[in-house]
Length: 506
Ligand code: NOJ
Ligand code: NOJ
Image (cartoon, rainbow, N blue to C red):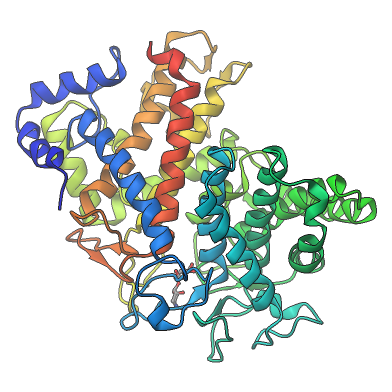
Protein backbone atom coordinates (compact mmCIF):
# COMPACT_ATOMS: atom_id res chain seq x y z
CA UNK A 1 0.00 0.00 0.00
CA UNK A 2 1.18 3.50 -0.71
CA UNK A 3 1.42 5.76 2.32
CA UNK A 4 -1.39 8.28 2.29
CA UNK A 5 0.95 11.06 1.50
CA UNK A 6 1.80 9.67 -1.90
CA UNK A 7 -1.86 9.59 -2.84
CA UNK A 8 -2.03 13.25 -1.91
CA UNK A 9 1.03 13.87 -3.96
CA UNK A 10 -0.72 12.98 -7.13
CA UNK A 11 -3.38 15.55 -6.44
CA UNK A 12 -0.88 18.21 -5.56
CA UNK A 13 1.18 17.68 -8.71
CA UNK A 14 -1.77 18.94 -10.65
CA UNK A 15 -1.34 22.39 -9.10
CA UNK A 16 2.07 23.65 -10.13
CA UNK A 17 1.99 26.74 -7.92
CA UNK A 18 1.56 24.76 -4.73
CA UNK A 19 4.25 22.42 -5.86
CA UNK A 20 6.72 25.18 -6.45
CA UNK A 21 6.15 26.79 -3.08
CA UNK A 22 6.31 23.58 -1.11
CA UNK A 23 9.64 22.77 -2.62
CA UNK A 24 11.04 26.09 -1.58
CA UNK A 25 9.77 25.99 1.95
CA UNK A 26 11.18 22.62 2.81
CA UNK A 27 14.79 23.35 2.12
CA UNK A 28 14.58 27.10 2.07
CA UNK A 29 16.06 27.13 -1.40
CA UNK A 30 15.01 30.61 -2.33
CA UNK A 31 17.28 31.40 -5.19
CA UNK A 32 17.22 28.07 -6.97
CA UNK A 33 15.28 26.73 -9.89
CA UNK A 34 12.13 24.65 -9.31
CA UNK A 35 12.79 21.09 -8.17
CA UNK A 36 13.18 18.49 -10.91
CA UNK A 37 10.57 16.26 -9.35
CA UNK A 38 7.17 14.94 -10.26
CA UNK A 39 5.91 15.44 -6.70
CA UNK A 40 6.44 18.26 -4.18
CA UNK A 41 9.66 18.20 -2.19
CA UNK A 42 8.08 17.30 1.14
CA UNK A 43 6.36 14.31 -0.44
CA UNK A 44 9.66 13.07 -1.80
CA UNK A 45 11.37 13.58 1.54
CA UNK A 46 8.69 11.70 3.46
CA UNK A 47 8.86 8.90 0.95
CA UNK A 48 12.66 8.69 1.19
CA UNK A 49 12.44 8.31 4.96
CA UNK A 50 9.75 5.65 4.67
CA UNK A 51 11.50 3.74 1.89
CA UNK A 52 14.82 3.91 3.66
CA UNK A 53 13.50 2.04 6.70
CA UNK A 54 11.65 -0.39 4.52
CA UNK A 55 14.78 -1.07 2.46
CA UNK A 56 16.78 -1.81 5.57
CA UNK A 57 14.16 -4.27 6.84
CA UNK A 58 14.06 -5.90 3.43
CA UNK A 59 17.80 -6.58 3.53
CA UNK A 60 17.37 -8.41 6.84
CA UNK A 61 14.34 -10.27 5.53
CA UNK A 62 16.63 -11.90 2.94
CA UNK A 63 19.17 -13.19 5.50
CA UNK A 64 19.10 -16.77 6.75
CA UNK A 65 18.07 -17.06 10.40
CA UNK A 66 16.39 -13.63 10.33
CA UNK A 67 13.96 -13.55 7.41
CA UNK A 68 10.63 -15.39 7.57
CA UNK A 69 10.31 -18.67 5.68
CA UNK A 70 13.96 -18.91 4.77
CA UNK A 71 14.52 -21.86 7.13
CA UNK A 72 12.11 -24.00 5.10
CA UNK A 73 14.44 -23.51 2.17
CA UNK A 74 17.58 -24.58 4.03
CA UNK A 75 19.13 -21.15 3.96
CA UNK A 76 22.19 -21.16 6.21
CA UNK A 77 22.26 -18.77 9.15
CA UNK A 78 23.92 -15.52 8.08
CA UNK A 79 23.54 -16.27 4.35
CA UNK A 80 22.43 -13.25 2.35
CA UNK A 81 20.09 -14.41 -0.42
CA UNK A 82 20.42 -12.24 -3.55
CA UNK A 83 16.71 -12.54 -4.30
CA UNK A 84 14.02 -15.08 -3.53
CA UNK A 85 13.27 -15.46 -7.21
CA UNK A 86 13.87 -19.10 -8.21
CA UNK A 87 12.85 -19.05 -11.87
CA UNK A 88 13.14 -16.44 -14.60
CA UNK A 89 15.60 -15.58 -13.23
CA UNK A 90 16.98 -17.97 -10.65
CA UNK A 91 18.73 -15.68 -8.18
CA UNK A 92 18.21 -17.92 -5.15
CA UNK A 93 21.91 -18.03 -4.28
CA UNK A 94 24.36 -16.18 -2.14
CA UNK A 95 26.67 -14.09 -4.25
CA UNK A 96 29.88 -13.07 -2.49
CA UNK A 97 29.56 -9.55 -3.88
CA UNK A 98 25.87 -8.90 -3.07
CA UNK A 99 26.35 -10.39 0.41
CA UNK A 100 29.44 -8.35 1.22
CA UNK A 101 27.68 -5.17 0.12
CA UNK A 102 24.57 -5.96 2.17
CA UNK A 103 26.61 -6.69 5.29
CA UNK A 104 28.57 -3.52 4.72
CA UNK A 105 25.30 -1.55 4.91
CA UNK A 106 24.29 -3.38 8.09
CA UNK A 107 27.68 -2.69 9.63
CA UNK A 108 27.45 0.98 8.77
CA UNK A 109 24.09 1.21 10.47
CA UNK A 110 25.43 -0.77 13.43
CA UNK A 111 28.29 1.68 13.78
CA UNK A 112 26.00 4.71 13.37
CA UNK A 113 24.09 3.41 16.38
CA UNK A 114 27.26 3.24 18.49
CA UNK A 115 27.36 -0.57 18.38
CA UNK A 116 24.29 -0.96 20.56
CA UNK A 117 22.02 -2.92 18.21
CA UNK A 118 22.31 -6.52 19.37
CA UNK A 119 20.32 -8.00 16.49
CA UNK A 120 22.62 -6.42 13.94
CA UNK A 121 25.63 -7.64 15.87
CA UNK A 122 24.31 -11.19 15.80
CA UNK A 123 23.57 -11.07 12.09
CA UNK A 124 27.06 -9.80 11.31
CA UNK A 125 28.66 -12.42 13.55
CA UNK A 126 26.64 -15.17 11.89
CA UNK A 127 27.76 -13.88 8.53
CA UNK A 128 31.42 -13.94 9.59
CA UNK A 129 30.97 -17.48 10.85
CA UNK A 130 29.47 -18.54 7.55
CA UNK A 131 32.21 -16.81 5.56
CA UNK A 132 34.86 -18.80 7.40
CA UNK A 133 33.04 -21.99 6.40
CA UNK A 134 32.43 -20.98 2.79
CA UNK A 135 36.05 -19.90 2.28
CA UNK A 136 37.14 -23.48 2.92
CA UNK A 137 34.76 -25.19 0.53
CA UNK A 138 36.37 -26.55 -2.57
CA UNK A 139 34.64 -25.12 -5.63
CA UNK A 140 35.12 -24.70 -9.39
CA UNK A 141 37.46 -21.71 -8.85
CA UNK A 142 39.82 -23.77 -6.68
CA UNK A 143 40.43 -24.64 -3.04
CA UNK A 144 41.39 -22.91 0.17
CA UNK A 145 44.98 -24.10 0.36
CA UNK A 146 45.93 -22.41 -2.89
CA UNK A 147 43.57 -19.51 -2.02
CA UNK A 148 42.07 -19.74 -5.52
CA UNK A 149 38.74 -20.94 -4.16
CA UNK A 150 38.23 -17.51 -2.59
CA UNK A 151 37.47 -16.03 -6.01
CA UNK A 152 34.29 -18.09 -6.39
CA UNK A 153 31.39 -15.70 -7.15
CA UNK A 154 28.41 -17.59 -5.76
CA UNK A 155 27.30 -20.44 -3.52
CA UNK A 156 24.07 -22.24 -2.86
CA UNK A 157 21.99 -20.79 -0.05
CA UNK A 158 22.87 -23.68 2.26
CA UNK A 159 26.55 -22.76 1.97
CA UNK A 160 27.65 -25.48 -0.45
CA UNK A 161 29.35 -24.98 -3.80
CA UNK A 162 27.67 -24.11 -7.10
CA UNK A 163 28.99 -26.49 -9.71
CA UNK A 164 27.65 -25.22 -13.00
CA UNK A 165 29.48 -23.03 -15.53
CA UNK A 166 29.69 -19.36 -14.55
CA UNK A 167 31.88 -16.32 -15.13
CA UNK A 168 34.65 -17.14 -12.68
CA UNK A 169 36.72 -16.19 -10.85
CA UNK A 170 35.40 -12.81 -9.73
CA UNK A 171 38.12 -11.12 -7.74
CA UNK A 172 36.07 -8.40 -6.07
CA UNK A 173 34.41 -10.86 -3.66
CA UNK A 174 37.23 -11.38 -1.14
CA UNK A 175 37.77 -7.62 -0.99
CA UNK A 176 34.12 -6.74 -0.40
CA UNK A 177 33.80 -9.45 2.20
CA UNK A 178 36.83 -8.27 4.17
CA UNK A 179 35.84 -4.61 3.85
CA UNK A 180 32.58 -5.32 5.63
CA UNK A 181 34.22 -7.47 8.32
CA UNK A 182 37.03 -5.00 9.01
CA UNK A 183 34.46 -2.22 9.30
CA UNK A 184 32.67 -4.27 11.94
CA UNK A 185 35.88 -4.85 13.91
CA UNK A 186 36.78 -1.17 13.76
CA UNK A 187 33.35 -0.31 15.05
CA UNK A 188 33.62 -2.76 17.95
CA UNK A 189 37.00 -1.34 18.91
CA UNK A 190 36.09 2.33 18.54
CA UNK A 191 32.91 1.93 20.53
CA UNK A 192 34.83 0.11 23.27
CA UNK A 193 32.75 -3.00 22.88
CA UNK A 194 35.67 -5.37 22.36
CA UNK A 195 39.41 -4.89 22.48
CA UNK A 196 41.37 -5.10 19.23
CA UNK A 197 43.32 -8.21 20.22
CA UNK A 198 40.12 -10.16 20.77
CA UNK A 199 39.91 -10.21 16.96
CA UNK A 200 43.27 -11.85 16.35
CA UNK A 201 41.74 -15.24 15.60
CA UNK A 202 39.06 -13.73 13.31
CA UNK A 203 41.84 -11.93 11.53
CA UNK A 204 43.87 -15.07 10.87
CA UNK A 205 40.92 -17.26 10.12
CA UNK A 206 38.75 -15.04 7.91
CA UNK A 207 40.39 -11.75 6.95
CA UNK A 208 43.98 -12.70 6.22
CA UNK A 209 43.13 -15.31 3.56
CA UNK A 210 41.04 -12.75 1.66
CA UNK A 211 43.66 -10.01 1.97
CA UNK A 212 46.38 -12.41 0.88
CA UNK A 213 44.24 -13.34 -2.10
CA UNK A 214 43.87 -9.66 -3.00
CA UNK A 215 47.52 -8.79 -2.53
CA UNK A 216 48.72 -11.67 -4.70
CA UNK A 217 46.09 -11.50 -7.46
CA UNK A 218 44.90 -7.92 -7.93
CA UNK A 219 46.67 -7.66 -11.29
CA UNK A 220 45.23 -10.91 -12.65
CA UNK A 221 42.21 -10.91 -14.95
CA UNK A 222 38.85 -12.06 -13.64
CA UNK A 223 35.18 -11.53 -14.42
CA UNK A 224 33.73 -8.08 -13.82
CA UNK A 225 31.06 -6.90 -11.42
CA UNK A 226 28.43 -7.81 -14.06
CA UNK A 227 29.89 -11.33 -14.47
CA UNK A 228 30.33 -10.99 -18.20
CA UNK A 229 33.79 -9.90 -19.13
CA UNK A 230 37.18 -11.37 -18.22
CA UNK A 231 39.70 -8.54 -17.78
CA UNK A 232 41.17 -6.14 -15.22
CA UNK A 233 38.52 -3.76 -13.90
CA UNK A 234 38.20 -0.43 -12.14
CA UNK A 235 35.48 -1.68 -9.79
CA UNK A 236 37.45 -4.73 -8.75
CA UNK A 237 40.67 -2.77 -8.25
CA UNK A 238 39.11 0.03 -6.22
CA UNK A 239 37.40 -2.29 -3.75
CA UNK A 240 40.62 -4.33 -3.57
CA UNK A 241 42.57 -1.17 -2.81
CA UNK A 242 40.13 -0.32 -0.02
CA UNK A 243 40.60 -3.77 1.49
CA UNK A 244 44.38 -3.44 1.61
CA UNK A 245 44.28 0.11 2.98
CA UNK A 246 41.86 -1.00 5.71
CA UNK A 247 43.86 -4.20 6.17
CA UNK A 248 47.00 -2.17 6.66
CA UNK A 249 45.38 -0.15 9.45
CA UNK A 250 43.95 -3.21 11.11
CA UNK A 251 47.23 -5.11 11.11
CA UNK A 252 48.99 -2.08 12.59
CA UNK A 253 46.40 -2.03 15.33
CA UNK A 254 47.03 -5.72 15.95
CA UNK A 255 50.79 -5.18 16.03
CA UNK A 256 51.38 -7.30 12.91
CA UNK A 257 53.91 -4.96 11.39
CA UNK A 258 55.26 -7.16 8.67
CA UNK A 259 51.84 -7.87 7.24
CA UNK A 260 50.95 -4.21 7.57
CA UNK A 261 53.95 -3.34 5.45
CA UNK A 262 53.09 -5.98 2.88
CA UNK A 263 49.52 -4.70 2.48
CA UNK A 264 50.77 -1.14 2.36
CA UNK A 265 53.17 -1.95 -0.49
CA UNK A 266 50.56 -3.73 -2.54
CA UNK A 267 48.05 -0.95 -1.91
CA UNK A 268 50.56 1.54 -3.26
CA UNK A 269 51.01 -0.54 -6.37
CA UNK A 270 47.28 -0.76 -7.00
CA UNK A 271 46.97 2.99 -6.55
CA UNK A 272 49.75 3.70 -9.01
CA UNK A 273 48.35 1.20 -11.46
CA UNK A 274 44.90 2.76 -11.28
CA UNK A 275 46.22 6.30 -11.66
CA UNK A 276 48.15 5.42 -14.77
CA UNK A 277 45.72 3.09 -16.51
CA UNK A 278 42.04 3.83 -16.12
CA UNK A 279 41.63 7.33 -17.41
CA UNK A 280 41.53 7.35 -21.21
CA UNK A 281 42.37 10.90 -22.36
CA UNK A 282 41.28 10.14 -25.90
CA UNK A 283 37.78 9.17 -24.80
CA UNK A 284 37.81 11.67 -21.97
CA UNK A 285 36.51 9.36 -19.27
CA UNK A 286 37.43 6.54 -16.89
CA UNK A 287 37.26 3.07 -18.42
CA UNK A 288 35.70 0.27 -16.39
CA UNK A 289 37.75 -2.45 -18.08
CA UNK A 290 41.18 -2.09 -19.60
CA UNK A 291 40.98 -4.12 -22.79
CA UNK A 292 37.41 -4.00 -24.00
CA UNK A 293 37.45 -2.62 -27.53
CA UNK A 294 33.79 -3.40 -28.11
CA UNK A 295 32.51 -0.93 -25.59
CA UNK A 296 32.82 2.75 -24.76
CA UNK A 297 34.10 1.78 -21.29
CA UNK A 298 31.55 4.06 -19.64
CA UNK A 299 30.04 2.08 -16.77
CA UNK A 300 28.08 2.78 -13.60
CA UNK A 301 30.46 0.32 -11.90
CA UNK A 302 32.97 3.17 -11.54
CA UNK A 303 30.56 5.01 -9.25
CA UNK A 304 29.49 1.90 -7.40
CA UNK A 305 33.16 1.24 -6.67
CA UNK A 306 33.77 4.77 -5.48
CA UNK A 307 30.64 4.73 -3.34
CA UNK A 308 31.67 1.49 -1.66
CA UNK A 309 35.41 2.05 -1.37
CA UNK A 310 35.32 5.76 -0.53
CA UNK A 311 36.21 8.75 -2.63
CA UNK A 312 39.64 9.30 -1.07
CA UNK A 313 41.65 6.49 -2.64
CA UNK A 314 42.45 7.25 -6.29
CA UNK A 315 40.24 9.74 -8.14
CA UNK A 316 38.02 11.63 -5.73
CA UNK A 317 34.52 12.42 -6.99
CA UNK A 318 35.40 16.09 -7.47
CA UNK A 319 38.36 15.17 -9.64
CA UNK A 320 37.89 16.26 -13.28
CA UNK A 321 38.18 12.69 -14.56
CA UNK A 322 35.29 11.58 -12.33
CA UNK A 323 33.17 14.61 -13.19
CA UNK A 324 33.51 14.04 -16.93
CA UNK A 325 32.80 10.34 -16.55
CA UNK A 326 29.70 11.05 -14.50
CA UNK A 327 28.53 13.69 -16.94
CA UNK A 328 28.93 11.40 -19.95
CA UNK A 329 27.26 8.44 -18.28
CA UNK A 330 24.22 10.46 -17.21
CA UNK A 331 23.95 12.07 -20.64
CA UNK A 332 24.12 8.70 -22.37
CA UNK A 333 21.49 7.14 -20.13
CA UNK A 334 19.14 10.10 -20.28
CA UNK A 335 18.91 9.72 -24.07
CA UNK A 336 19.05 5.94 -24.18
CA UNK A 337 15.78 5.02 -22.49
CA UNK A 338 12.30 6.15 -23.55
CA UNK A 339 11.11 6.52 -19.94
CA UNK A 340 13.89 9.03 -19.34
CA UNK A 341 12.82 11.16 -22.27
CA UNK A 342 9.21 10.97 -21.13
CA UNK A 343 10.15 12.10 -17.64
CA UNK A 344 12.20 14.98 -18.95
CA UNK A 345 9.31 16.10 -21.13
CA UNK A 346 6.79 15.74 -18.34
CA UNK A 347 8.80 17.95 -16.02
CA UNK A 348 9.91 20.55 -18.57
CA UNK A 349 6.31 20.87 -19.77
CA UNK A 350 5.27 22.07 -16.33
CA UNK A 351 8.32 23.96 -15.18
CA UNK A 352 10.94 26.16 -16.63
CA UNK A 353 13.91 23.94 -15.94
CA UNK A 354 17.01 22.84 -17.84
CA UNK A 355 16.50 19.23 -18.99
CA UNK A 356 19.99 18.41 -17.81
CA UNK A 357 19.02 18.98 -14.17
CA UNK A 358 16.47 16.21 -14.26
CA UNK A 359 17.42 12.86 -12.75
CA UNK A 360 16.94 9.79 -14.93
CA UNK A 361 17.04 6.00 -14.68
CA UNK A 362 20.59 4.69 -14.97
CA UNK A 363 21.53 1.38 -16.58
CA UNK A 364 24.74 -0.60 -16.06
CA UNK A 365 26.60 0.50 -19.21
CA UNK A 366 25.53 1.71 -22.65
CA UNK A 367 25.93 -1.58 -24.53
CA UNK A 368 24.10 -3.71 -21.96
CA UNK A 369 21.51 -6.14 -23.36
CA UNK A 370 20.71 -8.17 -20.23
CA UNK A 371 17.00 -7.68 -19.54
CA UNK A 372 16.92 -9.43 -16.17
CA UNK A 373 15.95 -12.83 -17.56
CA UNK A 374 17.55 -13.13 -20.98
CA UNK A 375 19.26 -10.99 -23.56
CA UNK A 376 17.21 -8.49 -25.53
CA UNK A 377 17.88 -4.95 -24.43
CA UNK A 378 19.23 -3.46 -21.22
CA UNK A 379 17.20 -1.35 -18.84
CA UNK A 380 17.74 1.12 -16.04
CA UNK A 381 18.45 -0.53 -12.67
CA UNK A 382 17.42 0.58 -9.20
CA UNK A 383 20.86 0.04 -7.71
CA UNK A 384 22.82 1.95 -10.35
CA UNK A 385 20.37 4.85 -10.10
CA UNK A 386 20.86 4.90 -6.31
CA UNK A 387 24.65 4.92 -6.61
CA UNK A 388 24.52 7.87 -8.99
CA UNK A 389 22.49 9.84 -6.46
CA UNK A 390 24.95 8.77 -3.75
CA UNK A 391 27.82 10.04 -5.91
CA UNK A 392 26.11 13.43 -6.31
CA UNK A 393 25.55 13.74 -2.56
CA UNK A 394 29.18 12.87 -1.92
CA UNK A 395 30.27 15.44 -4.46
CA UNK A 396 28.13 18.12 -2.79
CA UNK A 397 29.65 17.30 0.59
CA UNK A 398 33.17 17.48 -0.77
CA UNK A 399 32.59 20.75 -2.58
CA UNK A 400 31.17 22.22 0.61
CA UNK A 401 34.39 21.43 2.45
CA UNK A 402 36.78 22.54 -0.16
CA UNK A 403 39.11 25.39 0.71
CA UNK A 404 40.38 26.21 -2.76
CA UNK A 405 38.26 27.92 -5.40
CA UNK A 406 36.65 25.65 -7.94
CA UNK A 407 38.26 25.95 -11.36
CA UNK A 408 35.93 24.86 -14.12
CA UNK A 409 37.85 23.55 -17.10
CA UNK A 410 36.96 22.78 -20.69
CA UNK A 411 36.41 19.19 -19.54
CA UNK A 412 34.10 19.90 -16.63
CA UNK A 413 32.09 22.78 -18.05
CA UNK A 414 29.58 20.36 -19.50
CA UNK A 415 28.79 19.04 -16.01
CA UNK A 416 28.83 22.31 -14.08
CA UNK A 417 26.84 24.20 -16.71
CA UNK A 418 23.94 21.91 -15.89
CA UNK A 419 23.59 23.95 -12.71
CA UNK A 420 25.15 27.31 -13.44
CA UNK A 421 24.46 27.83 -17.15
CA UNK A 422 27.09 28.18 -19.84
CA UNK A 423 27.97 31.80 -19.07
CA UNK A 424 29.14 31.07 -15.51
CA UNK A 425 32.47 32.27 -14.13
CA UNK A 426 35.20 29.74 -14.67
CA UNK A 427 36.70 30.27 -11.21
CA UNK A 428 34.28 30.16 -8.31
CA UNK A 429 35.39 31.00 -4.79
CA UNK A 430 33.79 29.11 -1.94
CA UNK A 431 32.13 32.28 -0.63
CA UNK A 432 30.58 33.22 -3.97
CA UNK A 433 26.78 32.93 -4.02
CA UNK A 434 27.01 30.78 -7.12
CA UNK A 435 29.15 28.31 -5.19
CA UNK A 436 26.48 27.63 -2.59
CA UNK A 437 23.89 27.57 -5.33
CA UNK A 438 25.93 24.93 -7.10
CA UNK A 439 26.04 22.75 -4.00
CA UNK A 440 22.29 23.00 -3.50
CA UNK A 441 21.58 22.19 -7.10
CA UNK A 442 23.83 19.13 -7.00
CA UNK A 443 21.93 17.86 -3.94
CA UNK A 444 18.66 18.49 -5.75
CA UNK A 445 19.96 16.66 -8.76
CA UNK A 446 20.68 13.68 -6.51
CA UNK A 447 17.13 13.93 -5.15
CA UNK A 448 15.77 13.90 -8.66
CA UNK A 449 17.34 10.45 -9.18
CA UNK A 450 15.70 9.18 -5.99
CA UNK A 451 12.44 10.51 -7.39
CA UNK A 452 12.94 8.22 -10.39
CA UNK A 453 13.20 5.28 -8.00
CA UNK A 454 10.07 6.45 -6.21
CA UNK A 455 8.22 6.49 -9.52
CA UNK A 456 9.17 2.97 -10.54
CA UNK A 457 9.32 0.88 -7.38
CA UNK A 458 6.16 -0.95 -6.30
CA UNK A 459 3.53 0.90 -4.30
CA UNK A 460 4.48 -1.28 -1.31
CA UNK A 461 8.06 -0.04 -1.64
CA UNK A 462 9.60 -3.25 -2.94
CA UNK A 463 12.22 -3.14 -5.66
CA UNK A 464 13.31 -5.65 -8.25
CA UNK A 465 16.55 -5.42 -10.21
CA UNK A 466 15.50 -3.33 -13.22
CA UNK A 467 12.67 -1.20 -14.55
CA UNK A 468 11.63 -1.40 -18.16
CA UNK A 469 13.15 1.19 -20.46
CA UNK A 470 9.85 1.79 -22.28
CA UNK A 471 7.08 1.40 -19.74
CA UNK A 472 8.90 1.77 -16.42
CA UNK A 473 7.52 -1.45 -14.92
CA UNK A 474 9.74 -3.48 -12.66
CA UNK A 475 11.52 -6.42 -14.22
CA UNK A 476 14.20 -8.99 -13.45
CA UNK A 477 14.75 -10.59 -10.05
CA UNK A 478 12.10 -9.47 -7.59
CA UNK A 479 12.98 -8.06 -4.19
CA UNK A 480 16.67 -7.80 -5.00
CA UNK A 481 18.68 -7.42 -1.79
CA UNK A 482 21.28 -5.26 -3.52
CA UNK A 483 18.61 -2.77 -4.67
CA UNK A 484 17.83 -2.20 -0.99
CA UNK A 485 21.46 -1.97 0.15
CA UNK A 486 22.17 0.59 -2.56
CA UNK A 487 19.11 2.69 -1.77
CA UNK A 488 19.86 2.61 1.93
CA UNK A 489 23.43 3.76 1.51
CA UNK A 490 22.47 6.53 -0.93
CA UNK A 491 20.02 7.94 1.61
CA UNK A 492 22.57 7.66 4.39
CA UNK A 493 24.95 9.75 2.33
CA UNK A 494 22.11 12.17 1.61
CA UNK A 495 21.50 12.66 5.34
CA UNK A 496 25.18 13.15 5.98
CA UNK A 497 25.46 15.69 3.18
CA UNK A 498 22.40 17.60 4.36
CA UNK A 499 23.82 17.73 7.90
CA UNK A 500 27.20 18.90 6.76
CA UNK A 501 25.83 21.54 4.41
CA UNK A 502 23.02 22.71 6.69
CA UNK A 503 24.60 26.16 6.89
CA UNK A 504 23.73 26.58 3.24
CA UNK A 505 20.03 26.18 3.87
CA UNK A 506 19.62 28.40 6.87
C1 NOJ B 1 23.32 -13.10 -15.01
C2 NOJ B 1 23.89 -11.84 -14.50
O1 NOJ B 1 25.02 -12.06 -13.76
C3 NOJ B 1 24.16 -10.82 -15.56
O2 NOJ B 1 24.95 -9.81 -15.06
C4 NOJ B 1 24.83 -11.38 -16.74
O3 NOJ B 1 24.69 -10.43 -17.78
C5 NOJ B 1 24.25 -12.71 -17.15
N1 NOJ B 1 24.10 -13.62 -16.07
C6 NOJ B 1 25.12 -13.34 -18.21
O4 NOJ B 1 26.34 -13.71 -17.70
C1 NOJ C 1 23.56 -9.83 -11.81
C2 NOJ C 1 24.54 -8.74 -11.59
O1 NOJ C 1 25.13 -8.43 -12.82
C3 NOJ C 1 25.58 -9.15 -10.59
O2 NOJ C 1 26.41 -8.04 -10.34
C4 NOJ C 1 24.95 -9.60 -9.32
O3 NOJ C 1 25.94 -10.02 -8.43
C5 NOJ C 1 23.97 -10.71 -9.59
N1 NOJ C 1 23.03 -10.33 -10.59
C6 NOJ C 1 23.18 -11.08 -8.34
O4 NOJ C 1 22.42 -9.99 -7.91
